[in-house]
Amino acid sequence: MGTRPDELRRAAKSVLEQGVDIELIVVSNGAELPDFPENVITRSLPENIGIPAGRNKGAELVTGDIILFLDDDGWYRSPDLAKHVQDRFAADPRLGAVSFRIADPDGGPDQRRHLPRLGSSDPLRSSKVTTFLGGACAIRTAAFEKAGGQAEEFFYAHEESDLAWRILDAGYDILYDAEAVMYHPATLPTRHPDFYRLNARNRVWLARRNLPWPLALGYLGSWVAITLLRERDRESLKTWFTGFKEGWRESPGRRRPMKWSTAWRMTKAGRPPII
Image (cartoon, rainbow, N blue to C red; front, side):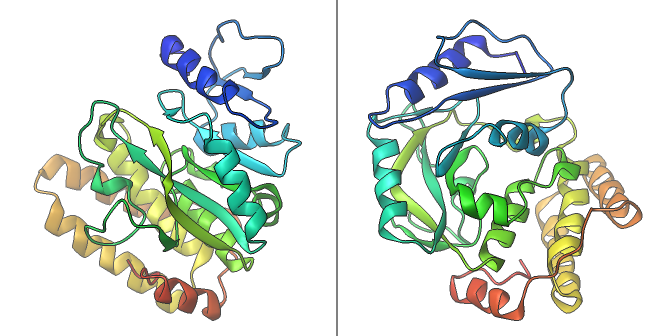
């Protein structure tokens, strides 16, 4: 979005230092781009069309077998990360996506919300999971395309869960790999002004797009209860429920309920699709 040019250069440098054949595509979501080396592919969009749509625009230019998404304020700790990821995918044709471990560059503890598992799971333990963070992942290009890319209607929040569920429903696995490490400053998602509204709206859309109705109602009921238990600020709750109502009034795009066998696989992986 053009607000972090120094951080963007740092992110690009960490990609270009990777020791494998890699292409770097930088998408500007309605902003000016700084100068890059000639081997960097750039795509400038006239306006901010949202995170998932921006990522889709970049993915359209991909020619490789694996897509790594990286936000401008993150960077890769090791120049061997891409090779490590490449080996992971080569060893397992059923692997659709890899979720990275996000480390604090200042040495703080890994944030619990960055772990794609329920509970206070050990960040150093790898396992199969059912989602990933959009700016800290690698996705098999074939799986990305089979899942239909990212849901552009979402604009921001839960677009990676929507994609992850569709990747799982296409028959692939998702791995949280503790050895695949990237750096990202410790931040709170509530820094975004539309966090509560879009978080609630997109949870409804996520369920409406992907879950059989018995699971969709259970999922949304669980999140209403969790939100009421977690959130004490009245204005934040009011905004959240405004987004929740919006999610029912507006179209989430194409509905494609997952197979019950996929829901069972998610349950076995530790996260049934009701929470």
